[in-house]
Amino acid sequence: MPEPLHRTALDSGPSPEAGPHRIPVPAAGPHRVVIVGGGFGGLTTARGLGGAEGIEVTLIDRRNHHLFQPLLYQVATAVIAPGEIAEPIRAILRRDRNVRVLMGEVEGIDAQGRAAILRDGTRIPYDTLVLATGATHSYFGHPEWERYAPGLKTLDDARRIRARVLLAFEAAEREDDPAARERLMTFAVIGGGPTGVEMAGAIAGLAHHALSQDFRRIDPKQARILLIEAAPRVLGTFTEDLSAYSKRALERLGVTVLTDHAVEDVSEQGITVQGRLIPAATVVWGAGVRASPAGEWLGVETTRQGHVPVGPDLAVIGRPGIYALGDLAMAKAEDGTPLPGLAQVADQQGRYLGRSLRDRILHGKAPAPFRFRSRGNLAIIGRNAGVVQWDHVKLRGFPAWLVWGVAHVYLLVGFHNRLVVTLRWLWAYVSFQRGARLISERDEAVMALIRGKTPAKLPPP
Ligand SMILES: Cc1cc2nc3c(=O)[nH]c(=O)nc-3n(C[C@H](O)[C@H](O)[C@H](O)COP(=O)(O)OP(=O)(O)OC[C@H]3O[C@@H](n4cnc5c(N)ncnc54)[C@H](O)[C@@H]3O)c2cc1C
Image (cartoon, rainbow, N blue to C red; front, side, top):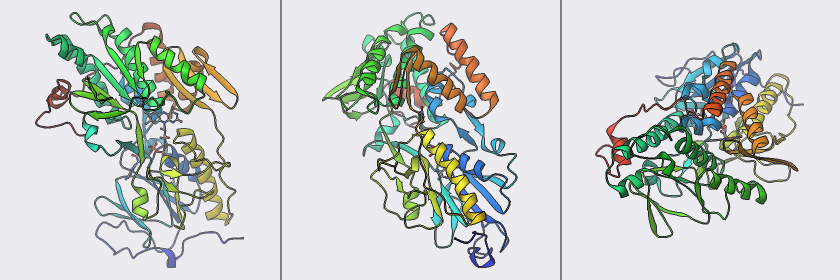
């Protein structure tokens, strides 16, 4: 049976004098687990190790909050406010006395010297390292598109998109030229996966219901909402009948769905597909993702999207003592297929890793392999319309919409968030209104972009 992994003076890493920013640690003592990332994967790992005597956990995140990404599109379309889907990481872990939280951005790993290195040079020593840094957008080799077509990953992204959508209607109300007005009232969502479908449906709900009575010169119901997908169908991970239903449901909401249309260019004027420019003031990117650069820090071979290959116990192949999970990792199901980038995968992996590290470190027990138990594939299209696929069970329409809502409220962190989001949804459902229609980013750069001019100072991507 393997030995428990307590730390000794011999394996304590470089000396405390190694650098000006090094946080001093005792030469011998508890086993130090450093977790990078407080998303679904990192947070559940930390919680699993909470209260374990003999283990000292440090969770590092560049943000101070855990974010519930599945509801970001509702912030971007003014259904709920940003604070309702975020919770301070410190507050979530406040009862776990052996867990400390550091706000900072990791920029590298010294695997030899066993330390995570922060942007300011601070070294955080570890005995075991867990990487859960998630993923970011990928623009298929066109990083310049990002300014014109923001993706949806963070609260700042959601606020920025909300400002652009609302400002486009404001600018259209003041515009005299019909062609310019049409461009302002055209919204293009690129990517027909769950994020793109949810965004397009939610923009349609905003334009055709919530804003429909509020303007005098324009009719928001005339807004043109396009969903552009390069593949032959939307929601390609669902069965063909659910995918076809989703397309019809989107069209009923007033969304024009263009499948088999690859985007060729994105600029301040709009998007180009099949050699034709479609003028659009607001473009949202929901097409590609790429894993965070943690694979580069480790110097390991990654997949084309930067995923770090891990074994059945989530250990990084060829890097003993280092684990990766969630959107960053390339883990496989029992049948050898890669696990998808989903919150439920990251959450289950975090629970597994918390338990298995505890057993490994404190009792020297080798863990059984990780097994993913799918809780189904869910997507929402709009009011009363959703799709659920779980083994042989398929739901569509209102029942799927209800299952989606209950599942997402249940998964939200914190009673306060669950209550407020439920009340907001109830209000939005009965009144058709959106309670978070605030334009907080009234800077000239965003307005200039919407007007089709490249401003002197572009908003940060
Ligand atoms: C718009 C949207 C909708 C989604 N909808 C669903 C859905 O309906 N159902 C579902 O199951 N999944 C959904 N997902 C996917 C799901 O959110 C992810 O699979 C999940 O968040 C992955 O968890 P993670 O812990 O790997 O990464 P994340 O949750 O992304 O967390 C990564 C954390 O690492 C931190 N970090 C990153 N780099 C560094 C660094 N260098 N230094 C310090 N900290 C760092 C980040 O700040 C972040 O807190 C959605 C995702 C998006 C973007």
